[in-house]
Length: 287
Image (cartoon, rainbow, N blue to C red):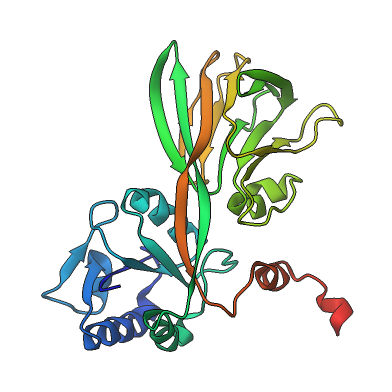
């Protein structure tokens, strides 16, 4: 891996300037082609540098210095380049980011020595069809969520899988999540945690009117279609909690698998370890 991109969250990163500078110096010392996002370059005082632009600059490895929100944003824009992603955790929860900043140089040495694995995370392709025409399309790593506004009534959402009727949800909304997204919005709505390599989606209703409408896991080769069957004025489609669009009565949301995001992982890390650390599993019992 010779072409390395360096990107970071855009706000409240001033305190990390020494870390950014240390990483940049380390990479240049190794004779890597280092592409730096503009706000990072300005923060560490670079005048002459190769610019990194999200979605436009192909690199072999992209170092993302931030939290899960930063990684979600970057992954959607870089998916077409098949770029390897490595997250340095500068956020709070950090399900996607791998290590804290203090370990970065030592960790990079391991990565460049080939001491890593690739963790493939499936993504979603989401289309909005209105009156027979595609009006929006998105890519998601976590989820596509359809929900009502704060003052709207419950919404009716007709769900089909591969053209066959599943059910009509009468609820606050519906989440279609990937295994990666199963620990995000879907989990807070009562959905199950899926192991990241499982080829599946989980459909999780948000506060359904019927107690019997529970989350359901669907194989990822299936195509999901959701029809908005309510005339509420305030219904929205949200992508990874970062992009959104309003929906109209009769709109069709089509969702299918859309390739993989490639995350670099250290051999010492595991999904179960992440769950224990981030969700505080069993800590009181282990003391």
